[in-house]
Length: 640
Ligand code: GLU
Ligand code: MG
Image (tube, rainbow, N blue to C red; front, side, top):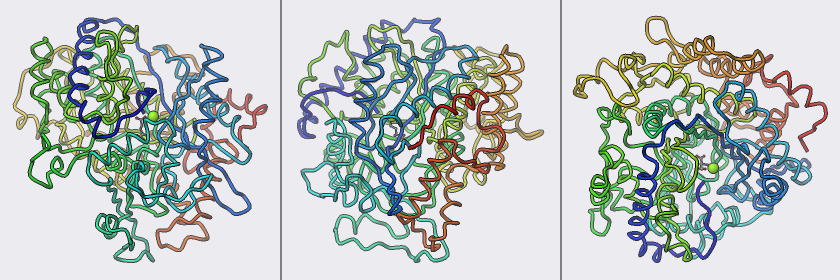
């Protein structure tokens, strides 16, 4: 989840003293990069996925599953056996927020040919096998978005009691600091977010009201801060770990030029809520059944470092601005010329930085994007990394950039590298199996191909995308939510989308007729006379492409999964988990997920992930395994 500097981390007070320095040099670093590579074009399509994993341990005797706090050691072993031994090793491993988490990516980015789509699942499988092979007895690698009993007593191995003291990182009543990755970046981020905010973070997730759930649902907390912050009928959480301790699935693309990257950034931003709802996988928090299906709002609140003044709760005295969103949230402005007229969200910017960027020849849209990211303070700073070579390093730019965790990220090339302009697609929840994760990744990558080839235009006012983000997180949004979506997505066909746009219209003029409310089924599968559907468009694109039979077969299976999740023929992971718990013999219809229920659920998830049992309601029957996989399965037993 960002840059890992080594050294001595500064306290919030000291970091704050250097905030202007970091911003000033961050901008200079950005300018160096921009001037050096703004005209770079003809970079080829490359892309890669990131999967975040949790390490769990099963206690079969006591029917308990815990998160194992060994991520740092597991990572060390994997890197030692992998990239440090062989620079061409097919997998790469990185740390993540939780001490029970690791992140895996392919060793090299994928390229632009169709056959690469057929290697994604094998690579994910290899990652799973590699990591599983270094785990202890009864341990497993799980791709679950949120651990249902995160923050419940004894949820980690070894067990630790939270120690809510001011000098600690989270000061949480539930989430012990030992569950945070031991690299100082992570605990410093946690502490500095809390200190900057002036109080602990507050996360309130609506509880799912079942037949026997107390109404109102109120938890009594002796702790005064918790008693004040916890809302009735909500599951209260108080630490960064409840958010950043969740796992996701991300995809990054290299575009051929900066303008193509800006175009893709905008187009994909409108797709974020749709694909997030389709990937919904996180219905349980702190041992309770919630009324939401996605992690997004939880992470957003878990890293909300805004002061009371910035949040608009008190008049501005010492803070510089009112800020309407957390650092982890949806994007606030489109970046392409075509997007400009749909930028209808009030944008708080650092005016001085904006003016400076304009003076340096940067256009309004890019300047305001960067000046908006730079309203934030750096959250961590290492004493040894204060003075940088602005022409050849980008740490200060990355410091601010990588702690703006938005649905999309626009990524300038690193200094002096042959990497091009990239965009990152960040909203997806991680799925149980490599098959599903490959399906979502391939779906999104293919979508970028048709967006570029057919010059599609999905843009709608950004405020409507924000409304969609809210809808997308609700329980069963995939079937019940209605989403604003553009009706005529081929409209842009007549003019060059990447570099210019059609005639200007006032936003009011466009608003009414250009978009409507649609179900995800309509958006994905199409509806006669209403919308062509993304899958039919992808299918017609595929018909015109040279694709070998095996790859075509894999892609069709991936698209079938997406199609059936959208139509409700198959369940989302969130829906499936809800039903699993609802049907558990121990469940008392009181919204409580006990240790035993959590254990059964995770055992089942692990079996599904390792293909030891079928799960047709989630994956369908015939199509989840690639033929090639069957052969290799015989000699690998990836489950412990
Ligand atoms: N785990 C975070 C999420 O679920 C993302 C952290 C990162 O940016 O790597 O969105
Ligand atoms: Mg990550």
